[in-house]
Amino acid sequence: MTNVTLSAMPKGNGFQATVTYANGVSISSAEAFPTKAKAISAAAMKLLDMPDRLEEFDAPDAND
Image (cartoon, rainbow, N blue to C red; front, top):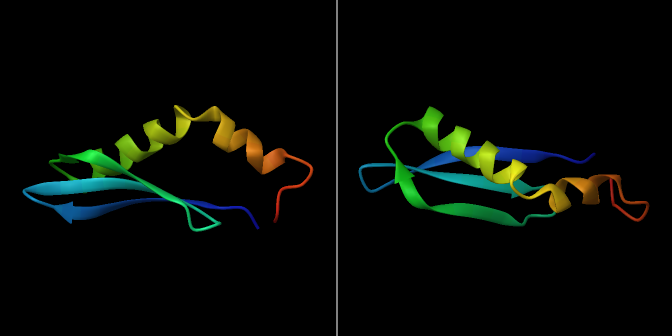
């Protein structure tokens, strides 16, 4: 099964956004956000900014 996790971890005075793919690769924001909701929203926007990563899910050789 292919999945992506959007998360928020404490960083400084706020939260850091992270996108984690099923294969273990994760991408975190450089900046901190004031709330968990804003951090997770930022992670979602980051995911949408990388359509090639999403297209890989439908590639014929993708591992499910």
